[in-house]
Image (cartoon, rainbow, N blue to C red; front, side):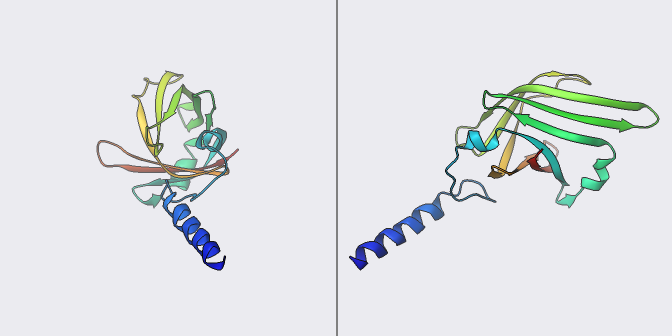
Length: 152
C-alpha cells in the first residue's frame, strides 16, 4: 500500500510540474483560462525593453483599463494628458481570442475613438492568475513591451 501511495504522489508531482503553460504561472488552476482572463484590469507596471517605464508613462496614460469579457469582446481605455494640447480619453474596442495553444491572446480591434484603427495583434501570456495578468509584445522593430495588470 505504501508503494502505491508513493507512486500516486510521484506521478501527481510529475504531472502537475509539466502542466505549467505560462512562464510565470500558474502550474495548476481549477478555473478555466477564460474565467481567469475575463476581468476589468488596471495597469500596475509597464516594462519597455526590460526597463520599468511605469513612472515615465504615468503622466501620459492615466487610468489605463483593459476589460476582457467572456463573450469574446474587449475594451482598452485610457486618459491622455498632453499639455498644452489638452486632455483626451481614448477607447479601443474589439474582439479577443486565445491562440490555438492558449499561450497568446489575439486582439482584433473594430473601433477606436482617437487616431487610426490599429492592426490585429497577439500578446504572449506570461502569467494568468485570477488576480494578476502579465502580457508581452515584441513589435516588428524589436521593442519589447510588458503589461502587468491587476483587477480594478
